[in-house]
Length: 176
Image 1 (cartoon, one colour):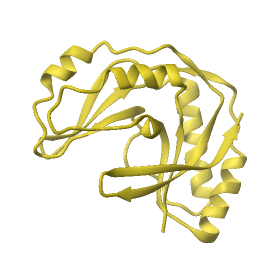
Image 2 (image 1 turned 180 degrees about the horizontal axis):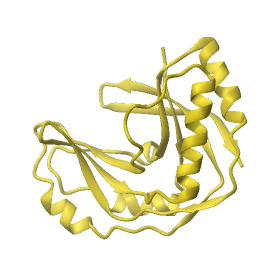
Image 3 (image 1 turned 90 degrees about the vertical axis):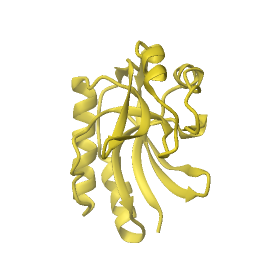
Image 4 (image 1 turned 180 degrees about the vertical axis):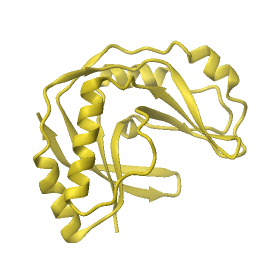
């Protein structure tokens, strides 16, 4: 069964700035251009009628066009060990509103709510336990910025786990 998520795809100049910041951490699994996205909702495994219900519910999500931007970097950890490096995206009122509307659409489609707090970011690297130190990378890239961009819609993606990372395939694109 496919894993689904809803995300915003940054434009090419923003992705280029993110790609330029990648590197310098041993054994980090850096994301490719095709993997760079800002998640609005992780749906998880879903297929058949439930996926169709989600496609229909997401079509009802409305928003005005708004600006988003990359501002700074950080990392996630589990049990004291870093697991991912990311570029931050400030949680503006329009982004928070869009996130809530997408979450409501997921619930209308019969999907449970996300239990984690929403922390907008674009994942840049996955870090295995054997990854090198990240302090230098965080320091060097702490002021990372990219040009603000207009968010004009979002996409429902399908994710396939492969040996060397995930393959993301857009299923439906929604425009405001």
